[in-house]
Length: 201
Ligand code: SF4
Image (cartoon, rainbow, N blue to C red; front, top):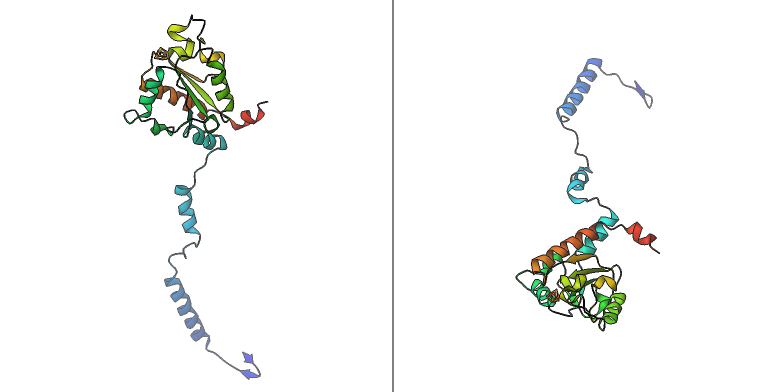
């Protein structure tokens, strides 16, 4: 071999031996592949990424934070108050906050007999509630007027003046029944579709 006008000569066997030593040394240190620098990412993906739909996410948020407007016209209200206290603890369902302002509420629980004299005010409160909004008709009076159904002064069910989503029968219904009605409403909210909401006129 000639480099810069100088001639070098090497023993071929010596070259082969040196080359063999280099290869063997490299091979002996190369039993395991180098770790992939992005491997940590692969391991983190399954426990940290949750796939869902916009509907499921939105419905979960809505059904987990229902804000109730005050609407306590008669005796069913005592069972509602009981449901809100520590023994039955309505806050387990994300709805212990009861609002005096309909603009800060999305749920009306109709806890009591409704008279025609009071009906326009209830309708106005409903109209002022934030969308989307729901109604639970609580008790026989809320569903049909109850024991006062034949009276000229009593509305025979809140569904005559506002749309009702869930009916909870009883006179009065116990707090457990109201909590069951709330769970039913939450199931109903869980099935809502954002697309259908947008399409609504
Ligand atoms: S259903 Fe019974 S407890 Fe409830 S408001 Fe009517 S009369 Fe009172």
